Image (cartoon, rainbow, N blue to C red; front, side):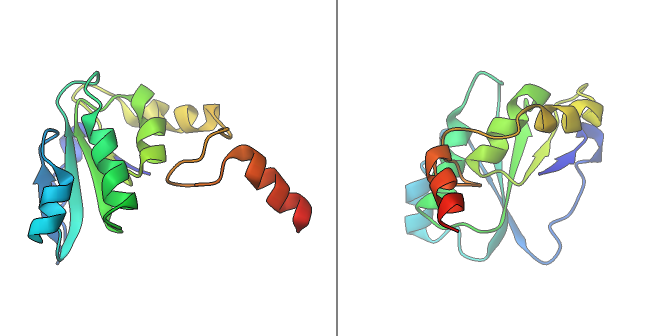
Length: 135
């Protein structure tokens, strides 16, 4: 996951199209209307760290609507939430104002594996073990 400090969030999308989606927007309606066509980066908003609707939007964009571009978390993004953001399909995050990116590596190193499947590894832990035994 690419981590961006709050004061460094001036990165252009290059040749691609950027779409900013409010956390109360219906992703299915956006997909149906064709708003996701040609989009290379979608920015999902976390107005407060306690508001998790953007997690659901990220999973829906990845699983149902097969969005393969950059999913960026913006807003009140804290170090504690980054691991779950990555597991939900986010590929980049802009840290909240005042949050230092120095502790990010420790946060990701703290959790080596997970029992549940996620966007990175859809198989649950027991299925991964069986696949290794069969190989």
